[in-house]
Image 1 (cartoon, rainbow, N blue to C red):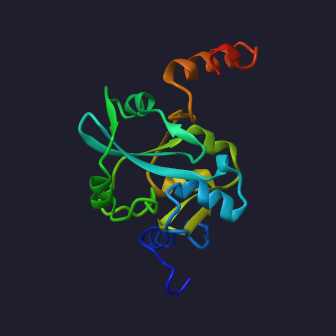
Image 2: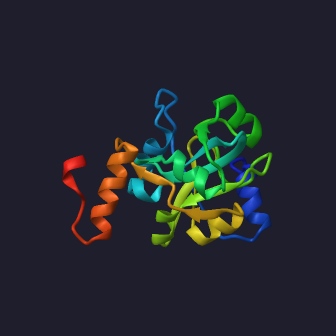
Amino acid sequence: MAGRGTTATMALERAKIPFTLHEYAHDPRNESYGTEASEALGVPAERVFKTLVAEVDGALVTGVVPVGGQLDLKALAAACGGKKATMAPVAAAERATGYVAGGISPVGQRKRLPVVVDASAMGFATVFCSAGRRGLEIELAPADLVRAASATVADIGRQAGLSRVDYDASDVGDHHGQGTDTRHA
């Protein structure tokens, strides 16, 4: 791993948490970093997680959700015991984590922000997240990710393109065993 180590990989090594490093050629023109990682590595998007920094009641927090979905800010605020969440400015996220956008890892951040991992991660044997730079991903067991990031687990993700009302309506159908409510899809 000479020359490829990052703050995230060093933190995992110090904690003796097993992981596999995956490198791919990052295209600087591609702004969808997580989707690029999923496609380049041939891994389903629901197993590749993006790290997003938000402000909950004025304090920075980290949300980790599948790259094919969106961060549900209301759910993130609730998971953190707050009332309101907004996306943090990119410069603030980079300054607090020590990583550049597209390479922010939930592990090994400069300032240890609270981390919430979407509950969907727990359904996989392993998941992928940024290793601390664009073009480098860590694969590890979700329980190890939670431990390494001192994270909490909550339902903070939602399908891309669904409004909060649509998301809630589709979820209601699933809880009653009737499938997704297609009127809102």
